[in-house]
Amino acid sequence: MTTVWSGSALAEAIEAFAPGSVESSAGSDVWVKPESISVVCEGLKTRPEFRFDLLSSLTAVDYIDHFEVVYHLTSLPMNASAVVKSRVGFGRIDPSIASVVPVWRGADYQEREVWDLMGIRFAGHPNHKRIMLWEGFPGHPLRKDYVTYDQSIASGASEATTLSDGGD
Amino acid sequence: MAIRTQPVTVNLGPQHPSTHGVFRMRVMFDGEEIVDVEPIFGYLHRGSEKLAEERTYTQIVTLTDRMDYVSSMLNNQAYILAVEKLAGIEPVPRGVWLRMIASELQRVASHLVATGFLLQDLGALGTPLIYAMRERENILDMFEMLCGARITNSYLRPGGVFMDAPDEFWPALDRGLDDIIQTIDELEEYLSGNELVFSRTKGTAVITPEQLINASITGPMLRASGVDWDLRHRAPYDYYDRITFERKLHTASDNYARYWVRVQEVRESVKIIRQCVEQIEPGPVRPSFDDVPRLIRPPAGDAYVAIEGSKGELGFYLVSDGGIAPYRMHVRASSLINLTLLRDMLIGGQFGDLFVTFGSVDLNMGEVDR
Image (tube, rainbow over all chains, first blue to last red; front, side, top):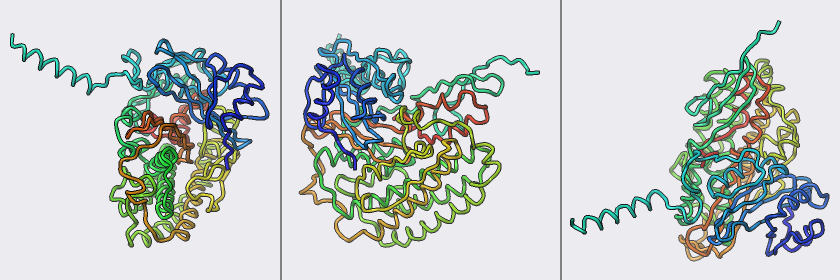
């Protein structure tokens, strides 16, 4: 059975090799400062007490006032799993975090997907391009303030009604 | 004396029968040799993750069917397990057994499709594919008995499944499992030791286990490189801890190894289904609506659950804000991530190996693009 690292234990272990990089921890989650994500991920992959050699999933969530990048890590030799999170882009201004592609190749397409759909930049990504949508697509659809096609049609319809009601 | 050639860029797909859907590649050839590959995705992108934010937890089951449409039951299972973890729902035993049977049948169907199309891509036009599809057809008939649908099943519900299996399902399942083993025996007799299959698949697109793990590639591809990693065994979900099965490993990590591992996993899945049928007991197939209402409001928080899908680790990440729809849903799509090393596997190979490698990776564009 997989061992799940608790947030507090993982925070303590991260602080031991990268002091001052942890923001907080709760449940099974650890929040890491975005500027130290590369150091923390490198340590989590290579240090003998973790050996998280497989990046299970990399995704992001839009919490209106900030974005959260979520890393789910798995260790094959230790059969363990852990969750690392990082808050970026407070005030929705230019969310950006260092790419972990140099640590795990598996982040390649996943980071491109997050950039494409959520609009978070990954500094140092070797091929920082959209993946699902075409270049030039307006906006990032998974953001909460993105106006979908249906919504834009609805607002357009109400505008047309107002104009005809004006009766000029 | 070598003939001097100029590199030529060729566009393959998105509408090409060998690309298993709408996959596009820009390939640069120097003569027959592949110099560069650039995969281009997105032709089947439907924004499923965004659509999920406007639907209730039960409605989203139908969206998961349409992701990897040759393994709908496995998608349902991964999603439902994530909902159960998020909302703290305790599943009922008969429902769990039924969904294990359904998902293992689906794994057999998916592996048969992968094997059949791989051999089709190898040039064995028709025959092996039709044999594999015939068995898949039986499985789809069984799904029709279970839930009335063949491809887009939507069979699972939080806490179990929505309908009990009818009486005629059990004899059909028993016969079907025998037929699957017979077909696999036939396929293996003709193909697993076939000189033509050997010469096309052995030693092509070899990739080391370290590269695979670093690129987050799991499932049959990883087991074909000799790494014993199967989430059903290492992190058992549902009742997989009450089941014994072997993890079939191959060490060559070439196209043949990936084919071989899938064929052997079909046999293991049949064993798993037989054990499920032995252990299943009568009872309700889903919790009552008093326990699990139709409209679920999980407490605020997040949950990530991964299962062993037919193509690798299939994970669902759900975030709830306490409402009736998820605040955010993310799918860890194994098909997309398994393509990370496609470039490394193809470069330096021959044009003829391109579609063989592509078939042995086994991807589904519905899941790649979502």
